[in-house]
Length: 181
Image (cartoon, rainbow, N blue to C red; front, side, top):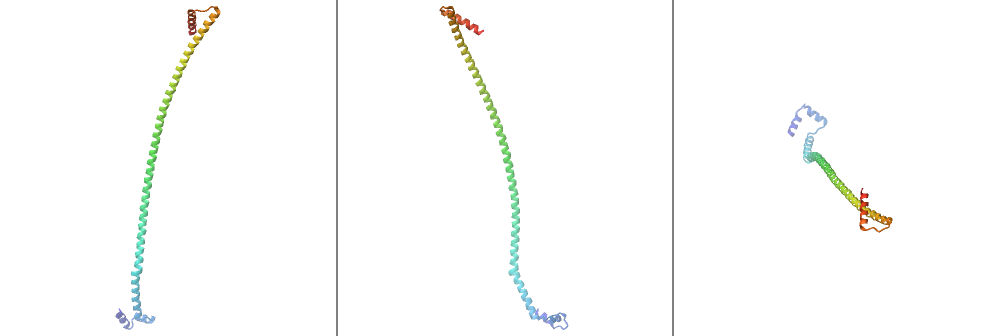
C-alpha cells in the first residue's frame, strides 16, 4: 500500500496529491494512523464490543425466558383458578345435597317421632280412661255399699227394730236396683 501511495504522490498534477499537500498531510503518519485505527478497532471489537454484545444477548435471552416463564405462570395460575372454582362448585353441590339429605332425614325422624308421640298420647288417654272407669266402678260400688248401709241403718232406726240379715240383704238389693235405674 505504501508503494501505491508513493506512485500517486509522484504523479504530477494529481488533484489528490495537491489537496493533501495543501492540508499538510504527511503520508507515512496518515498510514500509521490508519493502521493503528484498524488495530484499535479490531481490538475493541474483539475485547470490548463482542463481550458487550454477548452480555446483551444473554440478557435478551433471560428477558425472553422470563417473559415465557411469566406467560407459563399466568397460564398455570388461570388453570389453578379454574380448578379451584371447579372444586368450590363441586363442594357447593355436595354441601347442598348433604343439606337436602339432612332435611329429608330430619323430616322423616320428625314424622316418626310425631307418630310415636301420638301413639304414646293415645296410650296415656286410654289408660287414663281405664283408670277413670275403674275408679268410677269402685266409687259406685262403695257408694252402693254406703247407701245400702245407710238405708239399713235408717230403716232400723225408723222402725225401731233390729233387722235380720235377710231383711238387710233385701233392702240393699232394692236400693241398688233403684240406684241403677
